[in-house]
Length: 427
Image 1 (cartoon, helix red, strand yellow):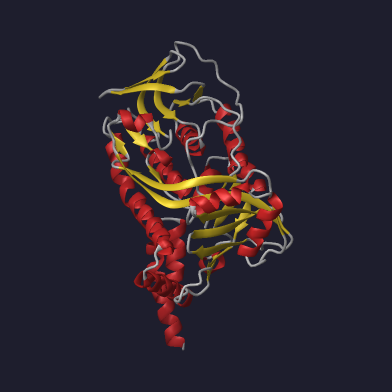
Image 2 (tube, one colour):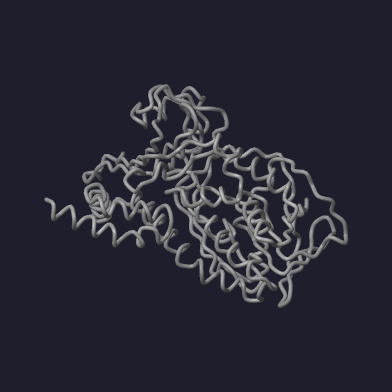
């Protein structure tokens, strides 16, 4: 499935700034970066009782991408009180289907995953980033526990008792804990002395929105092609978003086409499943790469979003993974237990997030490489895996639950086994 970009883009809607003066510089938590991950982190931790500084320069840049959020993420946004304002701009994802769009000798069967199989009305919802940012910006600006600081971070000094952030406006912010949500070139990560593992792919994502003459029926379709996934995800009405992963030279060619010609190419690639396609203005291209920090926290620092992990927009994992970062931090830093933030909170966060981040990064990387590989064993493994998922209901249910929330499939495993045994006995 598509989307899932969550880079540390600054605020795109001008909020009501709280008064900032030289006496307001000591905070319990400072969040650096006001993209989707940074704003949600600031809001969640402020609602959990901490005094928060959200540090980022304002910008009018428009984000034309979309994000698919899974059920766990939606429930978290609902607890924060913002989902009801986002929902009118979102489309339900009730079915996700995978179609082998290659012409290779071994082609995988078409597999459909339906949320009704696991008792959900939807796996999640897809929404424009601009709508999500707008609602979050308003909620952040109205939160009394958040002070918005309109500046960039110049330098960061991490100490044993606090963290000092020198800003480009000449001010200094001191906090007990810092959350780096400042993207792949994170100054917070660099100051903490945390290295990264990074690698690139010979691929570029063409990202766009389009209207169509046939209803999408809340179905997301992912075509597996030799250059990567071609993924359509529903938007409200007869509109969808698209992430089309191709070679860099193909991406440049597609982005340069007139909208009418590009619409024809998209419709042809989709086999006219949604009727006549009309691509909208605002086509963007994004070179694909992956990055994982060598630690996700250290001392009084934690890294979330693309400051800690980033990978191709496959399987709707990006922002959903970041929200799980934030859920853990909210649990750790909330004031329900009282007291000061421990000096080793970053290391605790790192231990709690490693398994989830590494497993998701590995799964996305393997899936992407399996599409690019011309090796017969790799093609056989991918085809066989999809064949099993398409024909073994309990396994398909487990995979769907795990895709929504880590551990959810494992928890449901005993009931899945008992249900399978009962069906076998009846037969």
